[in-house]
Image (spheres, one colour):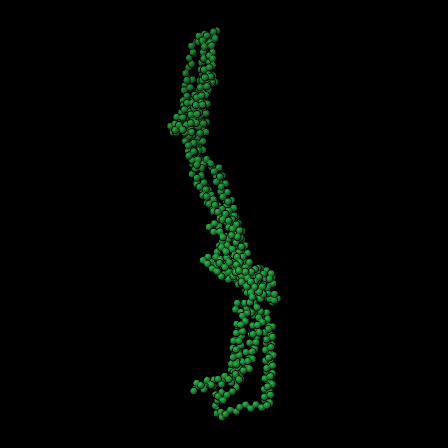
Length: 543
């Protein structure tokens, strides 16, 4: 019973509040709902169009031609977005399609660019083990045809820009490798010239000539030994001739008249003696060579050829001397040899021996100089070997680098031709954007529900606020609660005819004022929200 009484009192209290504040609630609800409903129905329509771009893989296997562009598709998409959504590109897009004609008078160029950038949405939609396989390009705007055209244009931007980026990167790689290859080739040619100049300058001191220089040095050493032995023999012969000159000359016996005597000593005889001495010297040199080398050695063969030629020359000279006729002795008076002729012959022999000694000494000096030259070559060979190895080491490393760069250059050329032939990875529009048949914003039904909820809530809030600010007493219970005096009874309000007329006039004026106020609110709302995209962006969840 007590609970029922309390529920009854609560209902009565609420009914009393409604009776007192119903016009506050009605006017508050009507005002808010009129404003929100008007805004909901007069907000501009926003359309959305979507173009789908797929990533087509390289048509040629990577092991045949390596792609010049590396990195994941997501990273490449972000790089392309930075390029395509740049200020210059978006400015051209705004001018090309006459976007935001109303906003140009109100917004700055930067604000317009930001609005376009905000209305564009690029989102990956497909993935595999290598990364993204497709993405969508969305655009929002008030005109369905323009929105579809802009979305397709943006998608074509991504396709064209990606192709240009790949071609540009492939060409850049080719140019870079070509420049590096040219530099390395120049260095390689310089090193080749250095090695060639080094080999030309120190040809006789290179390690390849080491054995030949040693053989020549050994041959010259043997020739020096033979030369010195020949000098010793020549000096002994000179001493022998000098000792003969000191012996007194004995006259030769007279020759019978009519007999023949040999011809006196002639130049041919002296030349024959000299050739025989040279033959003896060559045979001694041959004996020395045979003691060290075999019969096939080039020096032995050459020496035997010299000996054979000299023997043939001596034989021809002896034949010439033997064929010369003898001189008959005159009958008138006998020829008696003179001691002076023998002395002259010895002087001639002595002069020939001295000339031969001088020749041997000159030959010794030449052989000594030649021996020193070959010895210097042999001594310089280790140093030249180290220098040549240093040059060759630098040359080998540069040549290896050149080969590597040449291979990379060929690969870069192949990749560039691959890009020009569009056989590499590409962006391709698979689904073009079409004009939307219905707007994507605003969601009017949702906005209306929100308007109802907001209006009801505001009406309740106004009623509660009015009750809270009202300090008057409306019931006997409220009076008893605020005073200690006993309450004897309640007198109902006595409404006269004049009071009824005044109340009717107040209600009439209030109703007309409320209607005018609602009309004014609706008109103001229409004026402020009609075509107001900014308000739509605030109210819509996407914007």
